[in-house]
Image 1: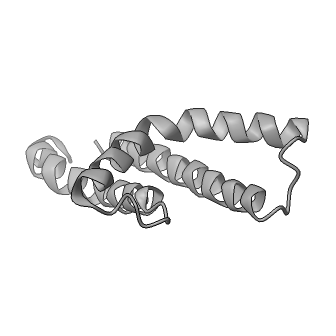
Image 2 (image 1 turned 180 degrees about the vertical axis):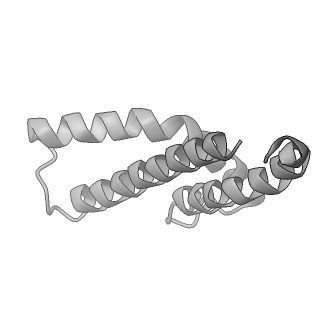
Length: 104
């Protein structure tokens, strides 16, 4: 059980790193620090977009419904990172009491 929780924890941490990389790259492109026509920047940006957009798009839609989508600042990565960082402790609280009789 600990191995499974540790695997889920590591996958979540890797996804958070991908999310942060996507945010930083988007800032670098917007502020003109990196060239948006550079082939490497386009490839990395496209890959990060494809990895993060399936999670960020529903979060953006939810923020639009509650009125926070038109502020000019995209809060969806922050919300997703906060939720993802809570998942390992939630899983640990839910699964370990069930698995406790089977752990030596």
